[in-house]
Amino acid sequence: MKYQEIIPGNRLKQYVKCYYIYESSSDAAFDDTVFPSGCLEIIFNLGSGQWQTGTADGFVTNPPIELWGQILRPLQIKSVGKNTMLGIRFFPHAAAYFLPDKVDLFNNQVADFTDHSGNEVKGLHNQLLETASWQQRIELIERFLTQKLARTENKLQKGVVVSGVMHEMMQRDFFDNIENVASKYGITSRYLQKLFLQYTGLTPKLYSKINRFQNSLKLMSKKESSLTSIAYDLGYADQSHFIREFKSFTGLTPSGYSFESSPVTAAFTGN
Image 1 (tube, rainbow, N blue to C red):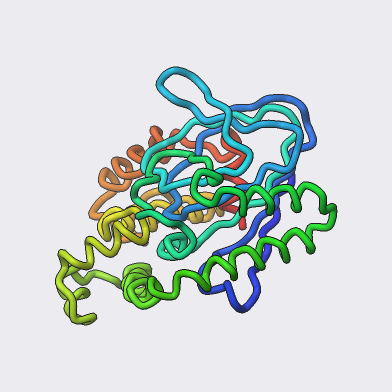
Image 2: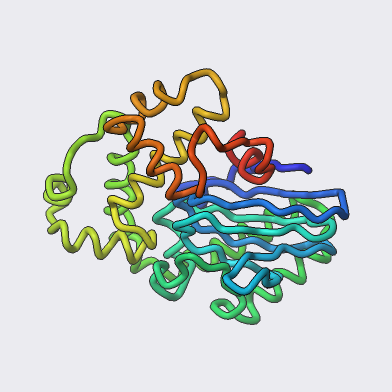
């Protein structure tokens, strides 16, 4: 398995967290679980294999161009065959600039991005398939996103507010309530909640929980701290609170989770 992250160009680096390449050279199928990340993604499948997503009735094959909404609970996935994927991981507030609908409409699903961008994105996918150079593929992606961004200038001002609030909430010493944060931007907490849902698919409280959960995964992957220390360092009220939240996002307790059993999470967390 190969996983590589690529930094976006200057025009897009405030919107795109990274591009990433995922390649699996083995035909062997494997199951994994995806956890909430706080980010939305668009993934172009460029290989001969398939990815499948778990549902109540079994697994369904993902479309060639996947739009990943906010995943709020553990999601089962399956890799079938040799996969080559080029992903766009947006910052939590930024996918809304490139999508026509409120992003919370995509929560807990892997949608077909062609349903929302049509022939334009189909043409891009064909170009990516015909291009062997990863550098040229990234250039094609950046051109596509830049053109999309130019059409949504009206969304930028509100998005800046959401981005600013998220930056505050990501600080380790953040203990303010959402009413005080909203007042700093001259808006009500109710309107801030509405903006958060529209731009991120999450409420401020849920975003904060997912961000803290992701930080716990990073600390656990380093294997340098005890679970008690991690719970304390991340501001959980106590270890039972940490265990409860971790289980809600993974289906497992922190002590029962192993990175070795989740190659996708291990790759993403290690970068």
